[in-house]
Amino acid sequence: MMRVRRLGLWSLLACVLLCACGGDDSSGTEFTTELLSVKDREVVIGAETESYFVAVEANCQWSATLTEKWDGMTVNPTTGGATVTTPKNTTPTRRHAVLRITSASGKVVRSVNFYQDGAASTISVSPEALQFTSSRGTQQIRITSNTKWIITVSDNVNCSVSPSSGEGNADVTVTVEENTSETVRPTILLTISANDGSSVQRIVRVNQDAAAKLYVSGAAEVTIEATDRTATFGIDGTATAEWHLTIYSGSDWVRLPASATYTGKGTFTVSCDNNERAESREAEIRVQWSGADIVMKLVQKAATVPSVSLSIDETTIDRHAATLSYVLGSSMYEVTESGLCYTLP
Image (cartoon, rainbow, N blue to C red):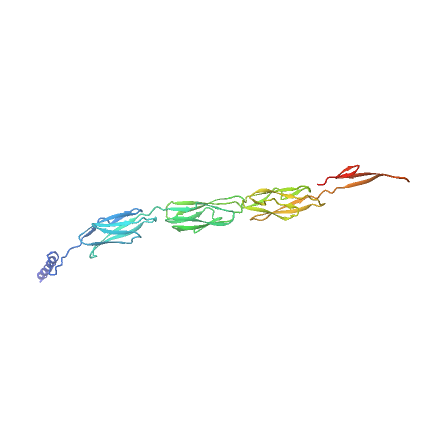
């Protein structure tokens, strides 16, 4: 009984082999084992655009497809293999794709792993220097990059940035607070560093003017004589802004120069009428600019009033005549036998 079973098994195996390796069967179908192989299983290419030929050996029809590919990556099957073309990798990240060679029946698949190196990290910034006035203000810088980045500020009390980190290209707003000091603020450094482990960085220098200030150089109150026709004042400070003069009071006897507009520090001279009054008088002149008004005072002394004295020295009177002797004096005018002599101004 056991032998009969073995005979049946061998007979069945012989029939299968004859069907697979023999000539034409009754249906005319030929059975052939699919053979498919590739030369490479892993390919590493640089970051630049590149084409790579993968050799394929096969005894059957086959197709080539890409999976997990990136934009612009193509495969072109040709005789004896397939050409894979990869575009330039502009990012610093290494990327991966798979080429699959598949037999016509789909039963045999060969895979080739493609790895493309990342590009070197790059960062550029424009402009590389910012100049602010003393007032609080904002400006923008443009970052062009192929990687993640982060910004550090050397003086984060008086300067801030938004955003302070990012990836790729971006516009960044830089804000500085008001500088109230009369000296320029020390340069603030904005350091833009690649946030991918590389050492790439760029620096933006932020400068800010000293506080804009104007003040009187010398006396804020000038006193002149009654007969003086001019008075000069000085203005000093760090401001480069334009300023102009106005007469707040005393315009009936004080006149401004023809050009009453100035820039930065300097001096100006006003003209005056003689004071013929017995009392002094005042005028107020103001410097007006973007900051608070600067007030200056001009005082003109009273005119000197002449004094005349007359004293009787001797008087003789009789029935025929009278004689009078006197002494005439003046604190200002010349006294002659004819009287007082003076010159009009």
